[in-house]
Image (spheres, rainbow, N blue to C red):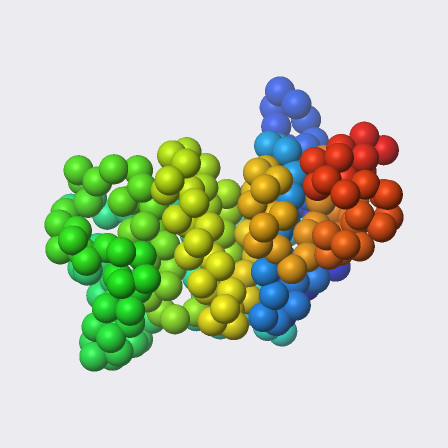
Length: 243
């Protein structure tokens, strides 16, 4: 469903020179699975997800989403995916419902279908009480729910979450993880990045460990336990990273 081969992204900085953010990365997220991309800050997680979301182009290598190439089929991919990022802003003069209609219409979805999908998403995220309030006074948790709503309103088959709990309090972070769990039971394909080991351990069918732009290992938790002889994901993570 999502596949990269030799994916590389290089930036050039006046101060630091050549920076390889993603280095010859081979990744596969299968249809209907939850794949956690695990790594420390600066490991390249966000860059990978931005490439897959067609927000930036790779320097070399290839990446496909449901068979569509990120370099040549951006529109087709954007119709398939929903993207949630901790960096994503919202339209502060609009209500969540207005934002939902705006995004739905951009994707040529009929208003009746948008209305039906919004009622489902508002119930899923428990947003009914503030669905028609302007977002400028929203708490961080309410804003994050609005961002998730915006990603779900088009009923995407594939969801990409970049650090979805970053900056959230414990209760709201747990709610976001619960939402991902519900989406998993609905058969969605979900690729999410995190540096919170417990999130990957609880939710992921498979885990990829990325460090300094390279995917150094991937597999089920059981696979990783067998390869390292360790049971705790924190110990597994450090065993691979410190190599």
